[in-house]
Length: 164
Image (cartoon, rainbow, N blue to C red; front, side, top):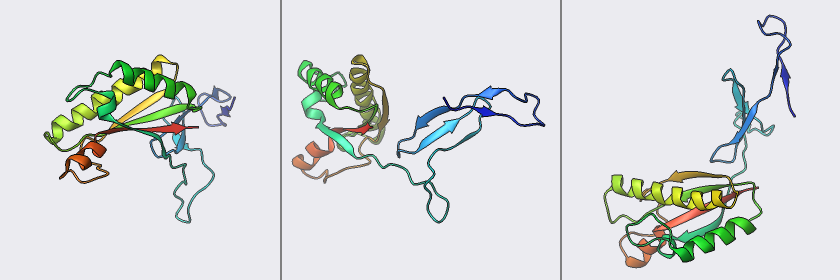
């Protein structure tokens, strides 16, 4: 395990700290210490010193209509089974769950609905022992036009990014 030793001048000289490690939504690995110090773990940076992180591509995009009833955030039994199978077989260390909606309701309502749906999917991941982080965007990140029924159907989705 990685440890750090504080040098002379510190009130706690020779005390060992073990940093925590977490991955942000852009795939950047961070370390953080008990005293709040934090930094990037990647040795790869651009010429401007900005860390180059792993960009995650979704490993699954599931239409919300296949998982949820209209205007609901509970997962259908068929959707639950499908998600459990996916999370068991995905061969990932963690998942990032992104919830999206179409533009049929208000922005505030769509943000709430997409959050509740992403959380419901994350609970399924956790039920099979997977780690999951949720993000939600409501109608703000469409992949198609919201002016047609087909476009709205594409925008009602849950994207799952596999962190390997």
